[in-house]
Amino acid sequence: MKNHAMLLGSFAIATIIGIFGQNMAYFLNENLIEVAPIFYLAVVTFVSISLYIMYFILVTRLYRKQRLIDINLMTFLYVMGCFVALLTICWSLFVLIWWWG
Image (cartoon, rainbow, N blue to C red):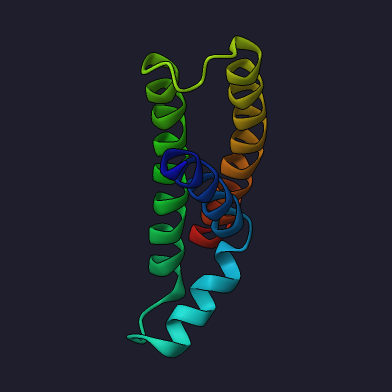
């Protein structure tokens, strides 16, 4: 159960900070050390991508330890994860590249 919560949590947090990274960069700039928000955006983008990588590692680990017995469920988690992760990462990188100019 704890692994499933980590799986869902990493996926949800990665998606949220990937989509709203620009707003988070401005928020962090106003409430933490005042540096250029682009640096916060780069960190948030890196964290989002890292959490997606963690998601795929957890899915694979759960399947190998036989905690995800159903192959259809694992396939669904991979396909859904790839689709959402790819869209979110593309968006995050687009925003980051746009900010760099």
